[in-house]
Image (cartoon, rainbow, N blue to C red):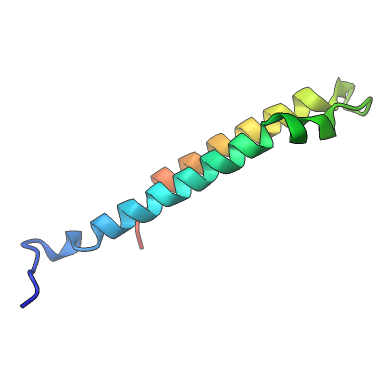
Length: 79
């Protein structure tokens, strides 16, 4: 006979936590790849955006995007 939880609203909490952990690891690996040397050379040219070199602008946008994505993943309510 399957074991039942004393509080049914927390039955799927372990699975949701595992899914969140996998998603956070995916964001980490994706951010690591985006901020690693081979891809950073893509933005190292003489191109300027609003008078600023493209490399610092790209780094800031990637950094801000990663923070926003992690915040969204951690703060969203389970369905």
